[in-house]
Structure formats: structure tokens, C-alpha cells
Length: 150
Image 1 (cartoon, rainbow, N blue to C red):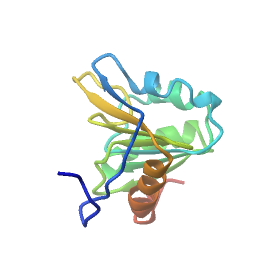
Image 2: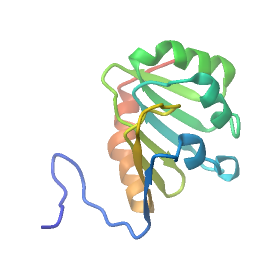
Image 3: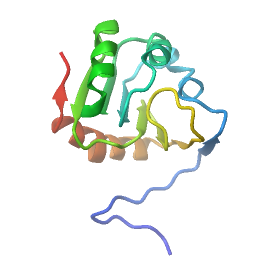
């Protein structure tokens, strides 16, 4: 049975995907962000280990947009002070763990954006259609409902 669009989501096809397990980290998954000129969109529950996140964001500290759960307020404010050109919003119900790297990379993970000591997995996909639909249907919708850190 094939997936189809409905109230719970949308169907998509993808010819290039990777299951990332155990040793892969956000730093590894995003090791090339310094070479990417388009925006990076992050959705996360918490922001664990801001020193670790600073290593990632420091590779290109602009054109990054982060939605975190309101419980991550202290970490979000710390990151915003260190990187004033990134934009961070808080949403009280966000627990999605998705990273979109323009123009076509989509990562969906079990781990928050940051360092984890747990066994985690993620699926990375290259698809312009998936990137655009996820940006429109998920990220932009939640962003509009969130409160920005100044």
C-alpha cells in the first residue's frame, strides 16, 4: 500500500536517503555547512550542550533559523548572545527534530539538535520537493506560532 497525502502528512518520493546510526552526530551530519550558502532551518525540543552547538554554528554563524521548545529558553538565549545573526524562536509544544539544509537536504532525527549521550538514529534525504514541502507545511507554520528571542 502506498502512502498518500492526508491530514496527517504528505507522501513523497526520494531517490537518495541515508539511515544514520550510532556514531553519526549533528556535527558530522552538518560538517559541510560552511560551504552551503542557503538557509539552514532547525527544529528541536532542547538545545543540549551549547559549547558543542557553538562548534557547529560557528562554521557559518548566519542564515540559521532555529525553533526550540520553550523549555530550551536559557540555552537559546546563550546561543543568541554568542551568535547574534542567527534567529531563534521558542514554541511551548515543539518537539520535532528536523534539520533542513538548502536547497535539498532534510534530516529527521530521534535526537535534539545538540550533543546526545543516548543511542540515536536519523534519516537524511536529498529531495528538493521534500525540502520545500517540509519547510512550508511544518517549519514555517510552527515558526509563525512562536516567540522570537531578541
